[in-house]
Length: 162
Image (cartoon, rainbow, N blue to C red; front, side):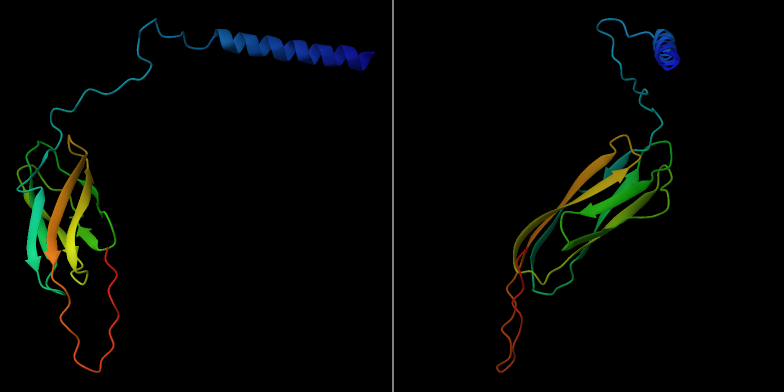
């Protein structure tokens, strides 16, 4: 009998404590009010402005120089930090500056496309930063000519188109 009374007392106490905690919780938002709060935009935030958001390679020879640069400027009032620059596939490798870009300064994001892949290509580079527009998509486009014929008697691997 004592165990039953003790169990009932513990259960009642737990229910009482749970109920008192629920009553001290923050009040629910008014009808129609938003439950998410967003900070107002920073008027001094950095702004990233690219000279060109698309690089046209044109027609390039097989295994030619696949390096190009996207030039940009920080037109905001605070330092610009590039968090990442990511290519859409392994054949497109971007390299972004690691140091903050001060207001009014320019910099470049270097891009290398693997020109051992014959045919037309269109690839993207996604840039993430602390700018007002936090994500920017850049494009590269062009055509890589077919590989030159191999000298007689040699065996070459056929590149995989990407």
